[in-house]
Length: 105
Image (cartoon, rainbow, N blue to C red; front, side, top):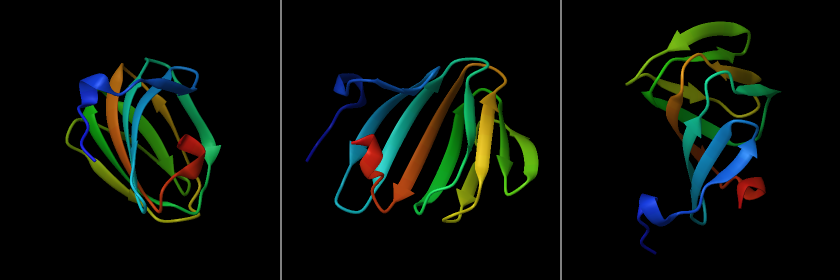
């Protein structure tokens, strides 16, 4: 299956968090446009996740440790670890999940 990011419809998964989502049998990719001030409440999931900050400044708390991440920063999030975030500026983030995030289909 082939895609072009410009043709994938955007879904507002949470207030201010707009995602273009691609799924395979075992993985999901989420290309996020995040509005300044948008918050991702603390949560955990069974999926392993890798987050890449492509643009902007994103404050992210992982397992109680809060840091600010900048373009080029990558965070590996183990399954079941609590995490949350807030966009300090408008951001573009890329998340990769394994296995597939079924609730994002």
